[in-house]
Image 1: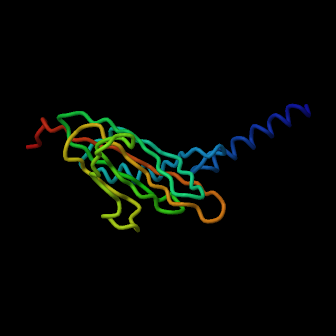
Image 2: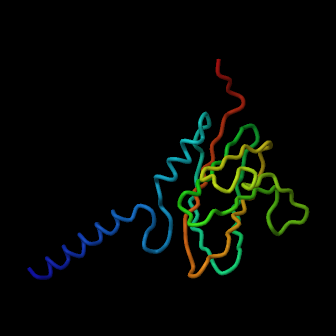
Length: 162
């Protein structure tokens, strides 16, 4: 009987810990649905295509995390970034080529939207592979963590509304 009570107690504790932590799981990965829903709402007339919630780790120096996004020709896209769960704003830069490539072109920088914005949007002119760079500022004191939410929406260009 004592074993059953212990197992039941551990199970209840596990459920309570899991349910209480909406923003982050104990291993540091991000799972904030509220921030994702806000980003999806910012798609407006675009249809939801995909999303990626990235765990951002601030260290003693500035660092860059790169994410590749493949886009298909024949569709218009909107990219939405939600920075609400970051202790410090991460700068978002979008390039036409990866960091390893020479002669890449900066297509978008969050500096143009102001540093205080938590929701950022970008609509690429051409559909091709794009490379998103998260420029992570250094931590002050101990290492910090946060979550960056990225949502991709699309519009079919061959379908016209009457």
